[in-house]
Image 1 (spheres, rainbow, N blue to C red):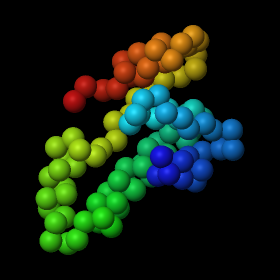
Image 2 (image 1 turned 180 degrees about the vertical axis):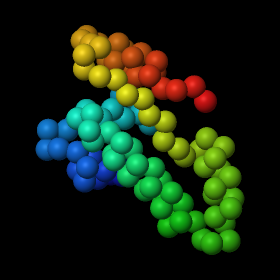
Image 3 (image 1 turned 30 degrees about the vertical axis):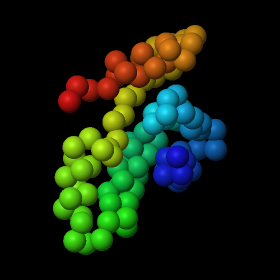
Image 4 (image 1 turned 180 degrees about the horizontal axis):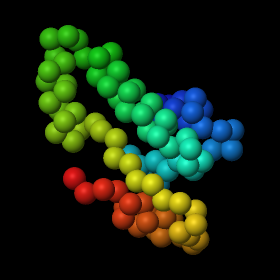
Length: 102
């Protein structure tokens, strides 16, 4: 959560919102212009965390684990004009549809 909140604080606005929509799922409400920078910052922090938390001898194993779906950023983007989203399930469904396959 801290990593996400810090990225939003650095590259978003005071009106932005960060919340949980699942145990490991976050929603960020921000301006379209902020999305790419926030996403890039979170990706960079994930990479830096690997360097920080794993000793040099274990970094290859850590990289393999992260690439095997253990820690990665998957993001979708929806625009307010496609709403309204009346329930959390509606919002989750729209976000899920916006995630590119792969």
